[in-house]
Image 1: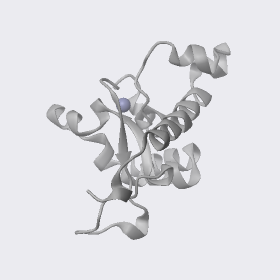
Image 2: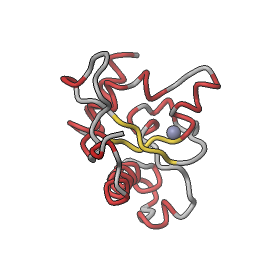
Image 3: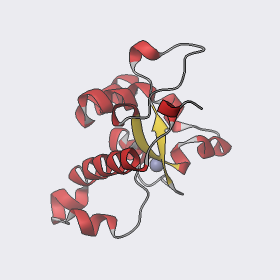
Image 4: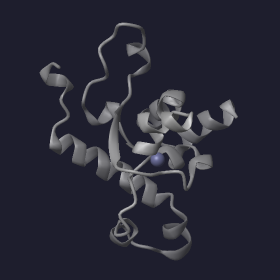
Amino acid sequence: MSKRDRTTPEVAAQVRLRDAHAIWEWSEERIHHGVTFRKFWATGRPICIAPLVDPKQSGLCWGRSTLDHVHAQNQMGVGKARALSDPDHLVSVCQGHMEDGRKAGFQWNTANRAAERAYLTDGVVAARAVQLVRA
Ligand SMILES: [Zn+2]
């Protein structure tokens, strides 16, 4: 593994905070009940963007929060190195929506790269639009 592939604790923290903030911002709890950011995360739920960009995934998160590497569109292709370990190429995804979900017959992250990419480049609305087009 080359040096640039390593995700530093600082980058990991930055990505988690960004995603946690987006999830909270779009949450029913904040919108309808005014729940604060701190209180929202006090429950210890996994930080995962799957339900954020794909609302059908709501309630299906489990396990630890992990970081998923996302290639930019022009980095796609067989034999390419994995995406850089910077916030522009990382999203928070729970175990259930990563490889471990495969045991249940469905791996959300690899099936939804376009939505992950849209989230990173254009935000939640763009990512949800990708999902709607697919549906
Ligand atoms: Zn999840």
